[in-house]
Length: 529
Image (cartoon, rainbow, N blue to C red):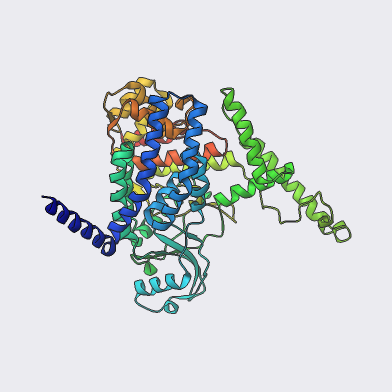
Protein backbone atom coordinates (compact mmCIF):
# COMPACT_ATOMS: atom_id res chain seq x y z
CA UNK A 1 0.00 0.00 0.00
CA UNK A 2 2.80 2.39 0.97
CA UNK A 3 4.63 1.59 -2.26
CA UNK A 4 1.45 2.23 -4.26
CA UNK A 5 0.93 5.61 -2.61
CA UNK A 6 4.57 6.46 -3.21
CA UNK A 7 4.28 5.48 -6.87
CA UNK A 8 1.18 7.64 -7.30
CA UNK A 9 2.97 10.56 -5.65
CA UNK A 10 5.99 10.18 -7.92
CA UNK A 11 3.85 9.91 -11.05
CA UNK A 12 1.69 12.84 -9.93
CA UNK A 13 4.72 14.97 -9.16
CA UNK A 14 6.35 14.10 -12.46
CA UNK A 15 3.14 14.91 -14.34
CA UNK A 16 2.84 18.23 -12.52
CA UNK A 17 6.44 19.12 -13.37
CA UNK A 18 5.93 18.06 -17.00
CA UNK A 19 2.85 20.31 -17.33
CA UNK A 20 4.73 23.23 -15.82
CA UNK A 21 7.48 22.80 -18.40
CA UNK A 22 5.37 22.08 -21.47
CA UNK A 23 1.98 23.78 -20.97
CA UNK A 24 2.28 27.60 -20.81
CA UNK A 25 -1.36 27.98 -19.76
CA UNK A 26 -0.98 25.56 -16.87
CA UNK A 27 2.22 27.32 -15.80
CA UNK A 28 0.47 30.71 -15.86
CA UNK A 29 -2.41 29.39 -13.76
CA UNK A 30 -0.07 27.87 -11.20
CA UNK A 31 1.97 31.07 -10.99
CA UNK A 32 -1.22 33.01 -10.28
CA UNK A 33 -2.49 30.56 -7.66
CA UNK A 34 0.87 30.30 -5.88
CA UNK A 35 0.98 34.09 -5.48
CA UNK A 36 -2.71 34.94 -5.03
CA UNK A 37 -4.08 32.16 -2.83
CA UNK A 38 -1.81 32.74 0.21
CA UNK A 39 -2.71 36.44 0.16
CA UNK A 40 -6.42 35.63 -0.13
CA UNK A 41 -6.27 33.14 2.75
CA UNK A 42 -4.42 35.68 4.91
CA UNK A 43 -7.03 38.37 4.18
CA UNK A 44 -9.91 36.03 4.97
CA UNK A 45 -8.26 34.91 8.22
CA UNK A 46 -7.83 38.52 9.32
CA UNK A 47 -11.41 39.32 8.30
CA UNK A 48 -12.66 36.41 10.41
CA UNK A 49 -10.62 37.60 13.39
CA UNK A 50 -11.66 41.26 12.99
CA UNK A 51 -15.38 40.62 12.50
CA UNK A 52 -16.22 37.37 14.30
CA UNK A 53 -13.57 36.73 16.95
CA UNK A 54 -12.02 40.00 18.10
CA UNK A 55 -15.01 42.21 17.21
CA UNK A 56 -12.54 45.02 16.60
CA UNK A 57 -13.44 48.66 16.16
CA UNK A 58 -12.80 50.61 12.93
CA UNK A 59 -9.35 51.91 13.91
CA UNK A 60 -8.02 48.50 14.96
CA UNK A 61 -9.55 46.87 11.88
CA UNK A 62 -7.95 49.48 9.62
CA UNK A 63 -4.57 48.82 11.22
CA UNK A 64 -4.85 45.10 10.47
CA UNK A 65 -5.97 45.64 6.89
CA UNK A 66 -3.31 48.27 6.22
CA UNK A 67 -0.72 45.77 7.42
CA UNK A 68 -2.01 43.31 4.80
CA UNK A 69 -2.15 45.97 2.08
CA UNK A 70 1.45 46.97 2.81
CA UNK A 71 2.52 43.33 2.81
CA UNK A 72 0.85 42.18 -0.42
CA UNK A 73 0.33 45.20 -2.72
CA UNK A 74 3.82 45.23 -4.23
CA UNK A 75 4.29 41.45 -4.71
CA UNK A 76 0.80 41.04 -6.21
CA UNK A 77 1.49 43.95 -8.56
CA UNK A 78 4.67 42.12 -9.52
CA UNK A 79 2.55 39.07 -10.33
CA UNK A 80 0.41 41.22 -12.64
CA UNK A 81 3.48 42.59 -14.44
CA UNK A 82 4.93 39.11 -14.85
CA UNK A 83 1.77 37.55 -16.29
CA UNK A 84 0.61 40.69 -18.16
CA UNK A 85 -2.35 40.02 -20.49
CA UNK A 86 -5.73 39.77 -18.80
CA UNK A 87 -4.23 40.42 -15.37
CA UNK A 88 -3.15 43.88 -16.52
CA UNK A 89 -6.67 44.43 -17.86
CA UNK A 90 -8.19 43.54 -14.49
CA UNK A 91 -5.79 45.93 -12.74
CA UNK A 92 -6.74 48.66 -15.22
CA UNK A 93 -10.45 48.02 -14.61
CA UNK A 94 -9.99 48.13 -10.84
CA UNK A 95 -8.01 51.38 -11.02
CA UNK A 96 -10.64 53.29 -13.01
CA UNK A 97 -12.33 54.27 -9.74
CA UNK A 98 -10.45 55.61 -6.76
CA UNK A 99 -12.75 53.80 -4.32
CA UNK A 100 -12.32 50.27 -5.72
CA UNK A 101 -8.91 49.54 -4.23
CA UNK A 102 -6.95 50.44 -1.09
CA UNK A 103 -4.37 53.17 -1.66
CA UNK A 104 -1.44 50.74 -1.55
CA UNK A 105 -2.87 48.83 -4.54
CA UNK A 106 -4.21 51.91 -6.32
CA UNK A 107 -0.79 53.60 -6.34
CA UNK A 108 0.53 50.66 -8.38
CA UNK A 109 -2.46 49.92 -10.60
CA UNK A 110 -3.27 53.46 -11.72
CA UNK A 111 0.07 53.63 -13.56
CA UNK A 112 -1.24 50.91 -15.88
CA UNK A 113 -3.92 53.25 -17.26
CA UNK A 114 -1.32 54.99 -19.40
CA UNK A 115 1.96 53.18 -18.76
CA UNK A 116 1.51 49.43 -19.16
CA UNK A 117 4.64 47.40 -20.06
CA UNK A 118 5.48 47.81 -23.74
CA UNK A 119 7.18 45.68 -26.41
CA UNK A 120 10.10 47.06 -28.50
CA UNK A 121 9.12 48.52 -31.88
CA UNK A 122 11.17 46.02 -33.97
CA UNK A 123 9.14 43.17 -32.48
CA UNK A 124 5.92 45.01 -33.31
CA UNK A 125 7.12 45.48 -36.91
CA UNK A 126 7.73 41.73 -37.14
CA UNK A 127 4.14 41.12 -36.01
CA UNK A 128 2.88 43.61 -38.61
CA UNK A 129 4.81 41.93 -41.41
CA UNK A 130 3.59 38.49 -40.37
CA UNK A 131 -0.01 39.70 -40.37
CA UNK A 132 0.24 41.48 -43.74
CA UNK A 133 2.46 38.88 -45.38
CA UNK A 134 4.62 41.61 -46.87
CA UNK A 135 7.46 43.94 -45.81
CA UNK A 136 6.63 46.83 -43.50
CA UNK A 137 7.81 49.46 -46.01
CA UNK A 138 5.36 48.21 -48.64
CA UNK A 139 2.62 49.81 -46.51
CA UNK A 140 4.20 52.39 -44.21
CA UNK A 141 6.84 55.07 -44.58
CA UNK A 142 7.69 54.96 -40.90
CA UNK A 143 6.52 54.10 -37.41
CA UNK A 144 7.22 55.99 -34.19
CA UNK A 145 9.26 53.60 -32.01
CA UNK A 146 7.74 55.10 -28.85
CA UNK A 147 4.24 53.64 -28.39
CA UNK A 148 1.28 55.94 -27.87
CA UNK A 149 0.06 53.35 -25.40
CA UNK A 150 0.37 49.73 -24.37
CA UNK A 151 -2.61 47.70 -23.21
CA UNK A 152 -3.32 44.18 -22.02
CA UNK A 153 -3.51 42.57 -25.47
CA UNK A 154 -2.04 45.14 -27.84
CA UNK A 155 0.22 48.11 -28.40
CA UNK A 156 -0.50 51.35 -30.28
CA UNK A 157 1.96 53.34 -32.41
CA UNK A 158 1.81 56.46 -34.53
CA UNK A 159 2.79 55.71 -38.14
CA UNK A 160 2.90 57.31 -41.59
CA UNK A 161 1.41 55.70 -44.70
CA UNK A 162 3.12 55.74 -48.10
CA UNK A 163 0.96 58.70 -49.17
CA UNK A 164 2.10 60.72 -46.14
CA UNK A 165 -1.07 60.27 -44.06
CA UNK A 166 -0.44 60.05 -40.33
CA UNK A 167 -2.34 57.15 -38.76
CA UNK A 168 -2.53 55.11 -35.59
CA UNK A 169 -1.64 51.41 -35.75
CA UNK A 170 -2.91 49.01 -33.10
CA UNK A 171 -1.05 45.69 -33.08
CA UNK A 172 -2.14 42.59 -31.18
CA UNK A 173 0.43 40.51 -29.30
CA UNK A 174 0.71 36.99 -30.83
CA UNK A 175 0.01 35.15 -27.56
CA UNK A 176 -2.80 37.47 -26.43
CA UNK A 177 -5.84 35.35 -27.33
CA UNK A 178 -4.49 32.03 -26.04
CA UNK A 179 -3.37 33.62 -22.78
CA UNK A 180 -6.71 35.36 -22.34
CA UNK A 181 -8.73 32.17 -22.71
CA UNK A 182 -6.56 30.49 -20.10
CA UNK A 183 -6.43 33.48 -17.74
CA UNK A 184 -10.17 34.18 -17.69
CA UNK A 185 -10.80 30.52 -16.79
CA UNK A 186 -8.27 30.81 -13.96
CA UNK A 187 -9.78 34.04 -12.65
CA UNK A 188 -13.35 32.69 -12.82
CA UNK A 189 -12.37 29.59 -10.84
CA UNK A 190 -10.72 31.80 -8.24
CA UNK A 191 -13.71 34.20 -8.13
CA UNK A 192 -16.17 31.31 -7.71
CA UNK A 193 -14.54 30.70 -4.32
CA UNK A 194 -13.28 34.16 -3.35
CA UNK A 195 -15.80 36.62 -4.86
CA UNK A 196 -18.80 34.82 -6.43
CA UNK A 197 -20.66 38.14 -6.81
CA UNK A 198 -18.19 39.09 -9.55
CA UNK A 199 -18.89 36.04 -11.75
CA UNK A 200 -21.64 37.69 -13.86
CA UNK A 201 -19.28 40.59 -14.61
CA UNK A 202 -16.48 38.17 -15.54
CA UNK A 203 -18.86 36.20 -17.77
CA UNK A 204 -19.76 39.35 -19.69
CA UNK A 205 -16.13 40.46 -19.86
CA UNK A 206 -15.31 37.04 -21.30
CA UNK A 207 -17.99 37.38 -23.98
CA UNK A 208 -16.89 40.89 -24.87
CA UNK A 209 -13.20 40.11 -24.95
CA UNK A 210 -13.64 37.11 -27.19
CA UNK A 211 -14.87 39.55 -29.84
CA UNK A 212 -11.91 41.89 -29.23
CA UNK A 213 -9.31 39.64 -30.85
CA UNK A 214 -10.46 40.31 -34.41
CA UNK A 215 -9.54 43.89 -35.24
CA UNK A 216 -11.61 43.82 -38.41
CA UNK A 217 -14.66 43.70 -36.15
CA UNK A 218 -13.32 46.61 -34.09
CA UNK A 219 -12.89 48.57 -37.34
CA UNK A 220 -16.55 47.90 -38.15
CA UNK A 221 -17.54 49.07 -34.66
CA UNK A 222 -15.47 52.24 -35.03
CA UNK A 223 -17.16 53.14 -38.27
CA UNK A 224 -20.64 52.31 -36.94
CA UNK A 225 -20.26 54.44 -33.80
CA UNK A 226 -18.63 57.20 -35.86
CA UNK A 227 -21.63 57.24 -38.22
CA UNK A 228 -24.08 57.17 -35.30
CA UNK A 229 -22.38 60.17 -33.68
CA UNK A 230 -22.24 62.07 -36.97
CA UNK A 231 -26.04 61.77 -37.18
CA UNK A 232 -26.57 62.71 -33.51
CA UNK A 233 -26.99 66.03 -31.67
CA UNK A 234 -23.38 65.58 -30.52
CA UNK A 235 -21.81 65.62 -33.99
CA UNK A 236 -20.05 68.95 -33.44
CA UNK A 237 -18.77 68.05 -29.98
CA UNK A 238 -17.46 64.49 -30.39
CA UNK A 239 -15.52 62.48 -32.93
CA UNK A 240 -14.56 58.82 -33.27
CA UNK A 241 -11.56 58.01 -35.50
CA UNK A 242 -12.32 56.42 -38.85
CA UNK A 243 -10.74 53.10 -39.74
CA UNK A 244 -8.79 52.17 -42.86
CA UNK A 245 -10.56 48.86 -43.63
CA UNK A 246 -8.22 47.85 -46.46
CA UNK A 247 -5.29 47.97 -44.02
CA UNK A 248 -7.00 46.13 -41.16
CA UNK A 249 -6.40 42.46 -40.43
CA UNK A 250 -7.31 40.19 -37.55
CA UNK A 251 -4.20 41.37 -35.66
CA UNK A 252 -3.76 44.93 -36.99
CA UNK A 253 -6.09 47.94 -36.81
CA UNK A 254 -5.21 51.12 -38.73
CA UNK A 255 -7.23 54.22 -37.90
CA UNK A 256 -7.26 57.99 -38.11
CA UNK A 257 -4.81 59.90 -35.92
CA UNK A 258 -6.54 62.41 -33.64
CA UNK A 259 -4.39 65.37 -32.63
CA UNK A 260 -4.80 66.11 -28.94
CA UNK A 261 -4.15 64.78 -25.48
CA UNK A 262 -5.75 62.15 -23.30
CA UNK A 263 -8.27 63.36 -20.75
CA UNK A 264 -6.26 61.80 -17.95
CA UNK A 265 -3.24 63.95 -18.93
CA UNK A 266 -5.38 67.07 -19.30
CA UNK A 267 -6.81 66.52 -15.81
CA UNK A 268 -3.30 66.38 -14.36
CA UNK A 269 -2.37 69.56 -16.25
CA UNK A 270 -5.47 71.27 -14.85
CA UNK A 271 -4.38 70.50 -11.30
CA UNK A 272 -0.87 71.73 -12.13
CA UNK A 273 -2.43 75.12 -12.87
CA UNK A 274 -4.49 75.07 -9.66
CA UNK A 275 -1.47 74.03 -7.60
CA UNK A 276 0.78 76.68 -9.16
CA UNK A 277 -1.80 79.39 -8.45
CA UNK A 278 -1.84 78.30 -4.80
CA UNK A 279 1.95 78.13 -4.63
CA UNK A 280 2.09 74.38 -3.93
CA UNK A 281 2.90 71.19 -5.82
CA UNK A 282 0.25 68.81 -7.17
CA UNK A 283 1.14 66.29 -4.46
CA UNK A 284 0.79 68.96 -1.79
CA UNK A 285 -2.57 69.99 -3.24
CA UNK A 286 -3.75 66.37 -3.16
CA UNK A 287 -2.59 66.07 0.47
CA UNK A 288 -4.49 69.24 1.39
CA UNK A 289 -7.67 67.90 -0.22
CA UNK A 290 -7.23 64.50 1.45
CA UNK A 291 -6.88 66.17 4.85
CA UNK A 292 -10.02 68.24 4.30
CA UNK A 293 -11.92 65.15 3.13
CA UNK A 294 -10.84 63.19 6.21
CA UNK A 295 -11.91 66.00 8.53
CA UNK A 296 -15.33 66.21 6.87
CA UNK A 297 -15.73 62.43 6.88
CA UNK A 298 -15.02 62.38 10.64
CA UNK A 299 -17.93 64.80 11.03
CA UNK A 300 -20.19 62.69 8.83
CA UNK A 301 -20.05 65.20 5.97
CA UNK A 302 -19.61 64.51 2.26
CA UNK A 303 -16.78 65.95 0.17
CA UNK A 304 -17.08 69.55 -0.99
CA UNK A 305 -18.32 69.68 -4.58
CA UNK A 306 -16.41 71.44 -7.33
CA UNK A 307 -17.45 74.77 -8.91
CA UNK A 308 -20.42 74.92 -11.29
CA UNK A 309 -20.18 75.16 -15.09
CA UNK A 310 -20.77 78.92 -15.04
CA UNK A 311 -18.20 79.47 -12.29
CA UNK A 312 -15.64 77.41 -14.17
CA UNK A 313 -16.26 79.48 -17.31
CA UNK A 314 -15.46 82.58 -15.26
CA UNK A 315 -12.26 80.97 -13.94
CA UNK A 316 -11.28 80.02 -17.50
CA UNK A 317 -11.84 83.60 -18.69
CA UNK A 318 -9.71 85.00 -15.86
CA UNK A 319 -6.97 82.45 -16.52
CA UNK A 320 -6.87 83.27 -20.24
CA UNK A 321 -6.78 86.99 -19.48
CA UNK A 322 -3.85 86.44 -17.14
CA UNK A 323 -1.99 84.39 -19.77
CA UNK A 324 -2.64 87.07 -22.39
CA UNK A 325 -1.26 89.74 -20.05
CA UNK A 326 1.84 87.66 -19.32
CA UNK A 327 2.40 87.03 -23.02
CA UNK A 328 2.15 90.77 -23.71
CA UNK A 329 4.67 91.38 -20.93
CA UNK A 330 7.06 88.78 -22.42
CA UNK A 331 7.06 90.60 -25.77
CA UNK A 332 7.52 94.07 -24.25
CA UNK A 333 9.11 94.64 -20.84
CA UNK A 334 10.00 90.98 -20.67
CA UNK A 335 12.88 91.52 -23.07
CA UNK A 336 14.56 93.69 -20.42
CA UNK A 337 13.17 92.08 -17.27
CA UNK A 338 12.37 88.44 -18.12
CA UNK A 339 10.01 86.59 -15.81
CA UNK A 340 12.57 83.82 -15.37
CA UNK A 341 14.50 86.19 -13.08
CA UNK A 342 11.53 86.60 -10.74
CA UNK A 343 11.12 83.72 -8.24
CA UNK A 344 7.39 84.45 -8.06
CA UNK A 345 6.97 83.10 -11.58
CA UNK A 346 7.42 79.47 -12.56
CA UNK A 347 10.13 78.84 -15.15
CA UNK A 348 8.57 75.64 -16.51
CA UNK A 349 6.10 75.71 -19.36
CA UNK A 350 2.58 76.31 -18.07
CA UNK A 351 -0.18 73.79 -18.83
CA UNK A 352 -2.36 74.89 -21.68
CA UNK A 353 -5.81 75.32 -20.18
CA UNK A 354 -8.06 75.05 -17.19
CA UNK A 355 -10.81 72.50 -17.79
CA UNK A 356 -14.50 73.05 -17.21
CA UNK A 357 -14.99 69.72 -15.44
CA UNK A 358 -18.77 69.91 -14.92
CA UNK A 359 -19.35 70.73 -18.60
CA UNK A 360 -17.00 67.99 -19.80
CA UNK A 361 -18.54 65.41 -17.48
CA UNK A 362 -22.07 66.36 -18.50
CA UNK A 363 -21.27 66.01 -22.20
CA UNK A 364 -19.46 62.69 -21.73
CA UNK A 365 -22.33 61.24 -19.68
CA UNK A 366 -24.91 62.51 -22.16
CA UNK A 367 -23.20 61.09 -25.24
CA UNK A 368 -22.77 57.67 -23.65
CA UNK A 369 -26.42 57.71 -22.65
CA UNK A 370 -27.29 58.51 -26.26
CA UNK A 371 -25.19 55.57 -27.46
CA UNK A 372 -26.86 53.20 -24.99
CA UNK A 373 -30.52 54.20 -25.32
CA UNK A 374 -30.82 55.63 -28.83
CA UNK A 375 -28.17 53.72 -30.80
CA UNK A 376 -27.93 50.53 -28.74
CA UNK A 377 -24.22 50.45 -29.59
CA UNK A 378 -21.67 51.76 -27.09
CA UNK A 379 -18.14 51.48 -25.75
CA UNK A 380 -18.14 49.45 -22.54
CA UNK A 381 -14.77 50.82 -21.39
CA UNK A 382 -15.01 54.65 -21.21
CA UNK A 383 -12.16 55.31 -18.79
CA UNK A 384 -10.19 58.61 -18.98
CA UNK A 385 -7.45 56.99 -21.06
CA UNK A 386 -10.02 56.34 -23.82
CA UNK A 387 -11.23 59.95 -23.96
CA UNK A 388 -9.23 62.71 -25.67
CA UNK A 389 -9.41 66.49 -25.71
CA UNK A 390 -8.54 67.45 -29.28
CA UNK A 391 -6.69 70.55 -30.40
CA UNK A 392 -9.74 71.67 -32.41
CA UNK A 393 -11.92 71.73 -29.27
CA UNK A 394 -13.79 68.48 -29.87
CA UNK A 395 -13.77 65.42 -27.61
CA UNK A 396 -12.32 62.26 -29.12
CA UNK A 397 -13.66 58.83 -28.14
CA UNK A 398 -11.17 56.03 -28.87
CA UNK A 399 -10.64 52.29 -28.32
CA UNK A 400 -13.79 50.47 -29.40
CA UNK A 401 -12.60 46.96 -28.68
CA UNK A 402 -15.32 46.38 -26.08
CA UNK A 403 -18.42 47.48 -27.96
CA UNK A 404 -21.75 46.20 -26.69
CA UNK A 405 -24.86 45.98 -28.86
CA UNK A 406 -28.32 46.06 -27.26
CA UNK A 407 -31.56 45.01 -28.92
CA UNK A 408 -34.60 47.29 -28.95
CA UNK A 409 -36.22 45.20 -26.22
CA UNK A 410 -33.10 45.41 -24.04
CA UNK A 411 -32.92 49.18 -24.49
CA UNK A 412 -36.58 49.47 -23.47
CA UNK A 413 -35.98 47.41 -20.34
CA UNK A 414 -33.01 49.56 -19.32
CA UNK A 415 -35.05 52.68 -20.10
CA UNK A 416 -37.85 51.57 -17.78
CA UNK A 417 -35.30 51.02 -15.02
CA UNK A 418 -33.84 54.51 -15.51
CA UNK A 419 -37.29 56.14 -15.43
CA UNK A 420 -38.13 54.24 -12.24
CA UNK A 421 -34.85 55.36 -10.67
CA UNK A 422 -35.41 58.98 -11.67
CA UNK A 423 -39.10 59.39 -10.91
CA UNK A 424 -40.48 56.28 -9.22
CA UNK A 425 -40.79 55.04 -5.66
CA UNK A 426 -38.48 52.47 -4.11
CA UNK A 427 -41.15 49.86 -4.90
CA UNK A 428 -41.07 50.95 -8.56
CA UNK A 429 -37.29 50.48 -8.60
CA UNK A 430 -37.57 46.99 -7.05
CA UNK A 431 -40.23 46.03 -9.58
CA UNK A 432 -38.11 47.21 -12.52
CA UNK A 433 -34.91 45.60 -11.22
CA UNK A 434 -36.64 42.23 -11.01
CA UNK A 435 -39.02 42.29 -13.98
CA UNK A 436 -37.13 44.46 -16.49
CA UNK A 437 -33.47 43.55 -15.98
CA UNK A 438 -33.98 40.16 -14.31
CA UNK A 439 -32.07 40.45 -11.03
CA UNK A 440 -32.75 37.51 -8.70
CA UNK A 441 -31.40 37.28 -5.15
CA UNK A 442 -31.65 34.52 -2.57
CA UNK A 443 -34.12 36.30 -0.28
CA UNK A 444 -35.45 38.93 -2.73
CA UNK A 445 -34.84 41.54 -0.04
CA UNK A 446 -36.44 44.82 -1.26
CA UNK A 447 -33.73 46.88 0.42
CA UNK A 448 -30.97 45.02 -1.43
CA UNK A 449 -32.82 45.05 -4.76
CA UNK A 450 -33.48 48.80 -4.56
CA UNK A 451 -29.88 49.58 -3.61
CA UNK A 452 -28.55 47.33 -6.38
CA UNK A 453 -30.71 49.15 -8.91
CA UNK A 454 -29.37 52.52 -7.83
CA UNK A 455 -25.73 51.44 -7.85
CA UNK A 456 -26.16 49.85 -11.28
CA UNK A 457 -27.59 52.78 -13.24
CA UNK A 458 -27.95 55.85 -11.04
CA UNK A 459 -25.60 56.93 -8.26
CA UNK A 460 -23.42 55.67 -5.42
CA UNK A 461 -23.00 58.68 -3.14
CA UNK A 462 -22.98 58.47 0.66
CA UNK A 463 -26.75 58.60 0.87
CA UNK A 464 -26.99 55.44 -1.21
CA UNK A 465 -24.00 53.54 0.21
CA UNK A 466 -24.56 54.70 3.80
CA UNK A 467 -21.01 55.97 4.18
CA UNK A 468 -19.26 52.93 2.66
CA UNK A 469 -17.23 53.00 -0.52
CA UNK A 470 -18.96 51.32 -3.45
CA UNK A 471 -16.87 48.13 -3.35
CA UNK A 472 -17.51 47.47 0.35
CA UNK A 473 -21.17 48.38 -0.03
CA UNK A 474 -21.72 45.91 -2.87
CA UNK A 475 -19.96 43.22 -0.82
CA UNK A 476 -22.26 44.05 2.11
CA UNK A 477 -25.33 43.72 -0.13
CA UNK A 478 -24.05 40.41 -1.49
CA UNK A 479 -23.49 39.09 2.03
CA UNK A 480 -26.96 40.21 3.15
CA UNK A 481 -28.77 38.76 0.13
CA UNK A 482 -26.60 36.90 -2.41
CA UNK A 483 -27.30 37.35 -6.12
CA UNK A 484 -28.51 34.13 -7.73
CA UNK A 485 -29.03 35.40 -11.27
CA UNK A 486 -28.15 38.52 -13.23
CA UNK A 487 -28.66 39.11 -16.95
CA UNK A 488 -25.18 39.37 -18.47
CA UNK A 489 -26.30 41.55 -21.38
CA UNK A 490 -26.88 44.59 -19.16
CA UNK A 491 -23.60 44.43 -17.26
CA UNK A 492 -21.64 46.54 -19.75
CA UNK A 493 -24.24 49.32 -19.46
CA UNK A 494 -23.92 49.15 -15.67
CA UNK A 495 -20.16 49.30 -16.09
CA UNK A 496 -20.37 52.44 -18.23
CA UNK A 497 -22.40 54.14 -15.51
CA UNK A 498 -20.04 52.90 -12.80
CA UNK A 499 -16.90 54.12 -14.61
CA UNK A 500 -18.34 57.51 -15.49
CA UNK A 501 -19.59 57.98 -11.93
CA UNK A 502 -16.12 57.11 -10.69
CA UNK A 503 -14.65 59.87 -12.86
CA UNK A 504 -17.29 62.34 -11.68
CA UNK A 505 -16.77 61.45 -8.02
CA UNK A 506 -12.99 61.72 -8.34
CA UNK A 507 -13.38 65.25 -9.74
CA UNK A 508 -15.92 66.13 -7.00
CA UNK A 509 -19.04 66.19 -9.13
CA UNK A 510 -21.35 63.40 -7.87
CA UNK A 511 -24.21 62.93 -10.32
CA UNK A 512 -27.44 61.01 -10.81
CA UNK A 513 -27.26 59.21 -14.15
CA UNK A 514 -30.95 58.37 -13.92
CA UNK A 515 -31.81 62.07 -13.87
CA UNK A 516 -29.33 62.81 -16.67
CA UNK A 517 -30.59 59.94 -18.85
CA UNK A 518 -34.32 59.96 -18.13
CA UNK A 519 -35.15 62.15 -21.17
CA UNK A 520 -33.30 59.71 -23.44
CA UNK A 521 -34.99 56.78 -21.69
CA UNK A 522 -38.43 58.33 -22.21
CA UNK A 523 -37.57 59.03 -25.85
CA UNK A 524 -36.65 55.37 -26.34
CA UNK A 525 -39.88 54.20 -24.74
CA UNK A 526 -41.99 56.67 -26.75
CA UNK A 527 -40.44 55.55 -30.04
CA UNK A 528 -40.73 51.80 -29.43
CA UNK A 529 -43.80 51.25 -27.25
